[in-house]
Length: 375
Image (tube, rainbow, N blue to C red; front, side):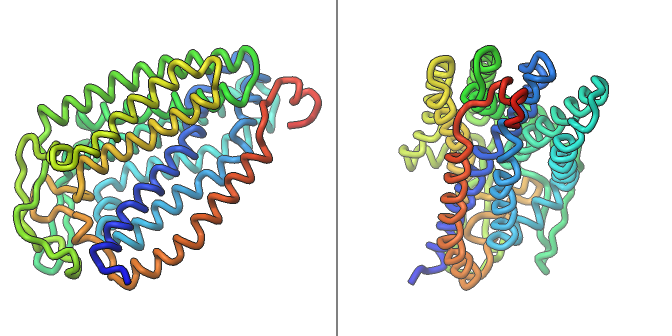
């Protein structure tokens, strides 16, 4: 039987898997929303690009629901703290995600050029806002956010929304945007023909170069100018969750500790660079390989943040001892075990159904398909 420590570690891994699933699956939807207005030179080409995501975007958002649900049930203290501190940002994400289906539905209702251009820009916003906000959130996780728990474990958040928009977090937002544009452009290159595919490939290469630059600068920033967190007291991983029952110190270089103690973790940033390189050199001739490569990049970028911060889930910059870790922010052992049983049953079903959908919808979409009434 799994003990409490093992269950907490398993759910930390599963949370990462769900976030990776969201970034890979819904990431190319967001990427295409950000670029299709510019890759598509006329209305027909834009319709082709939209048809690459319209049949699948709803299913792809299942990963977002699973991720948010996992945080709510497995890490309730993290859920309460993060959604309080990042409330305005999460509200912007919600509004943007609501805007996407509205734009996809209403864009084709009128033939008017002004009407369609308006919804085109709405779709662009629906892609940029979540991509930027998610990057900003990950940036602030490494910086820490100002919150604390009192003696009754009541949480108080002391920051403001605009405090989150600091230079490092905005840089992480650029990392997120460039990564998802690369991923979305690779999907567009895979699913379209001729001129659209070529323009998508060029867009992917430009985004890949921007990603490498921003990702590298962010890494140097963490190494040289951001203080990390470290637990100095002894924590029993099998004890009940209590986020104030520890001592934490902050010092420069602490975020590199895990890579020093566990060198295998370096594979995460290495894979991010490797995936980007393969995407860059293969997208014009082998778009499927490029799409797989950018998916590897997205997953590796998530793992890099997770490995860097482990075991912290959300550090507190104002009261370090209140920082949330995987050992003191989880639900009860019984809850984690029951959820694990449900995850073992339902995640394979979701993966099987997703694979079947993409197999059925395999192949390229061409402008002539629109004229022939296929779409």
